[in-house]
Structure formats: structure tokens, C-alpha cells
Length: 108
Image 1 (cartoon, helix red, strand yellow):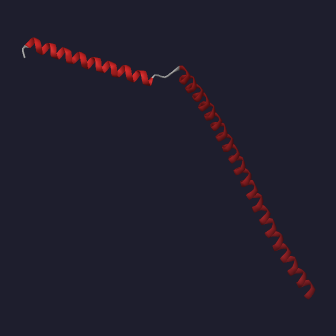
Image 2 (tube, helix red, strand yellow):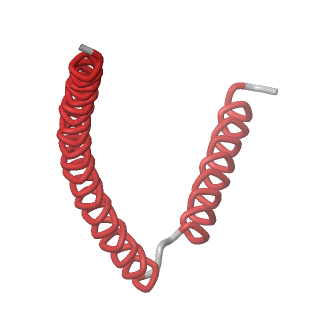
Image 3 (cartoon, helix red, strand yellow):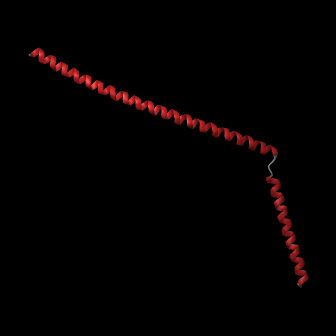
């Protein structure tokens, strides 16, 4: 094979490789093209996702506020319960003292 034939064979092989690459690109582009209807659907889905995320954020904010309110209410209720138990304990002790005093007066 002389120099001229080698150049022709190499040029032909490069052209065939280029043509096959271009055809593969065109075929891939043809099958993966996104239509306007698909783009509209993607836009609607993106909007719906955005609205769902906003609703989720609002729900999380409401839940956190409600949880803080209920925690505060629970703390107040526990404080009131402790105060009531302390008052009941004092009243029982006072009642026992009164009973003991009355028994001493009745015996004495």
C-alpha cells in the first residue's frame, strides 16, 4: 500500500466514523426530545410540588407552634398540680394536728 492509498483509506475511515457518530447523535436526539406537552406537564408538576412544599412548611410551622403551646400548657398544669398537692398535704397535716388537739382536749 503506497502513501496515497493509505491517505484515501484513512480519510474514508474517518469520514465513516464521523458519519456514524453524527447519525448516532441524531438518533439519540430524536428519541430523547421533549415535546411541548411534556414541558407543560413538567411545569404543572413543578408548580404542584412548590405548592406542596409551601403547605408542608405551613403545616410544620403550625405543628411547632401547637407543640410549644401544649408544652407550655402542660408545664402550667403540672405547676398547678404540684401546688394543689402541696396544699392538700398541708391541709391533711393541719387536720391531723386538729384531731390530735381535739383528742388531747377530750382526754384532758
